[in-house]
Image 1 (cartoon, rainbow, N blue to C red):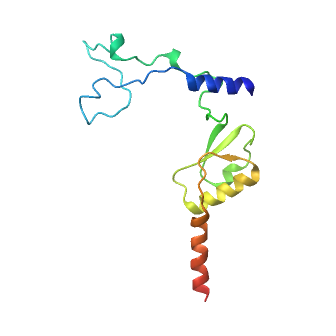
Image 2: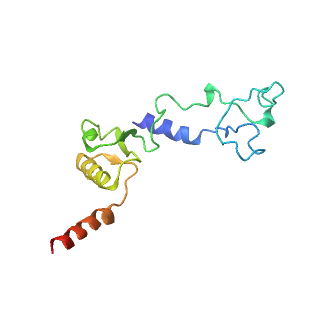
Image 3: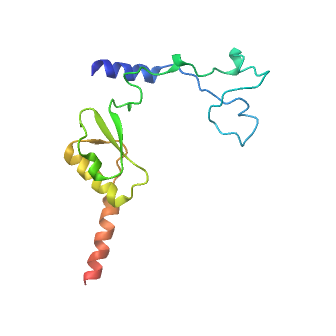
Length: 141
């Protein structure tokens, strides 16, 4: 685990350039996503230093920690509480999918807490859980 933590810290300090799309500053409609320069006279394609670096294999993170969360856990995306079964709390952490609603999210978070799993995008759901309970009490009266 010590070697993994060292590699994660080294990955964070890695001096990687911001790979910018050619002509990004010229047109507002261009997205800030990498596209390989293909122009015949393109200075960036010809790798002039002042025109920005191209992505290369040497810029990648170490294979042992590639895709890991900075906390050192392997991320597992969860949609239902049933998917929590069989996860290892020592090496895996849970990220609840964005499409999951508050009711199911609360259920997943409580179940993960019982199993000792870390939830990377946990929300404070006290208000979301209490509100429907108060409405049901009004209906009973």
